[in-house]
Image (cartoon, rainbow, N blue to C red; front, side, top):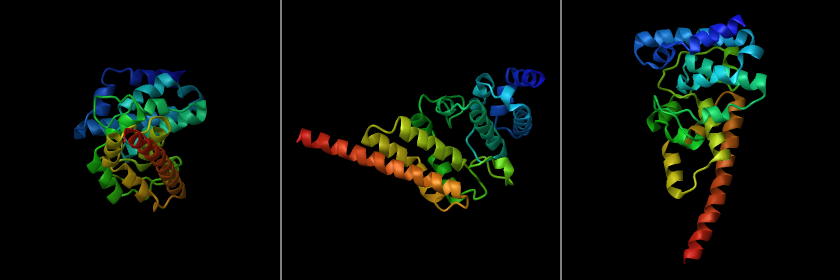
Length: 224
């Protein structure tokens, strides 16, 4: 109960989002300290701390990068799934790479990605990243401008499963995010689970595109 009160006090504090979403260097230090404290509190008594009311506000402070702070936030989501046996996919579908905005679907969240940052992630792929809880391994310092490949692959999988692009233009926009390039790059990751995850997503992509190709071909033949 004491830990829950501390969590509620932090998340409901009027300056919580101010410090956890700001980009200024001074605020970044405070953001890092706050997230480290949150991560510690959540892991003290996961059976009590892993409540939807506690993790839902965290989607606003999550940036999807490979920085230690963002990996801690993602690990809190994973901790919730393990404790409650509930998926946080609907929550992550509301994530957006654009500050102060939210998405309505995983596809919209994916389209909010900065293609240049995704490309930089491909070129500077964090080989130290693991699918399992990252804090069982050594985390290396990473720029906040590099996305977390694990998060992007999970988001892509959710998009393919729930709401794939429904038009050629939407497919073009999806490929323009460079997320497919990231999946291909992840096939050479050091972590075997990341390679397996990337391969599964590419297979799902291929099957979905085959279905769409047949659908568009049938539509064109009817028009002719």
